[in-house]
Length: 303
Image 1: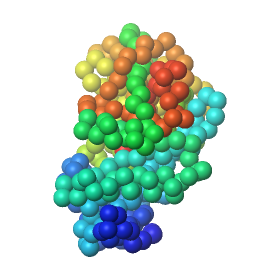
Image 2: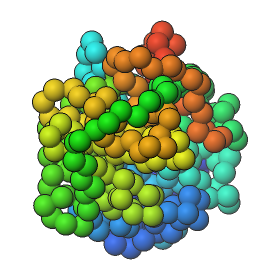
Image 3: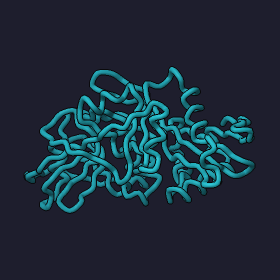
Image 4: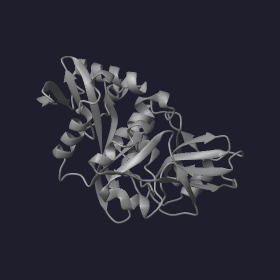
């Protein structure tokens, strides 16, 4: 945890960084997060998997949090190089403190603190702030999602759904996400975020969507939506046998496979993707990954 006194426009605030172990400060953060986004980070903290890749930056006025930004850190694998990236998320400013430069201060502070350490940043902005982030060197880029029709093939592979409340299943899940390969072209997977979505917050709907096909040594995080099998993420330990795994998980009603990440290869069609009113912004070094090829940020990497 770090604490600093900060003066912005002749007003003094307290900047708290990485303070999640301080109960009263964390309570204020959770209250604000719920007010803005209708969820909290408390279960994530209590799970024990909130690690140093999730760094919270908050400005306090007295005991009241008035502005906040979360920095999520990723070691991102691409076909040609490994990148160290930051995602800015849960950006919030109390209505009584807008237009006072607080979000600007937090963003510039983060950029200064991590200068020379990160290869780029990305974030998802709602429609009310599309003009804000270009002032800091961010560019709007398109996303494309991979999809293809599926003709169900007979499969004798056993599919096991994991229950992460069982220690043996939790350890198996952790083995796959730390040791497994993803066949993802822009791999922004994050150990802490995987637990945030799949373990700490059952209300998000992923805790009962984790499947292992033991014979294929493959783990899938997936949901069937009518005739569409949405694969949020796939991990394999040895050979890439994802097509066999997808057929094993598919039902007789499955007519389409859609991926929540960008595959390295495969006979997929790429269609424009946009999540509700959110637009992806990236810094200049990341622009070619989205303009020179059809790419998306993995759905389980959003903050």
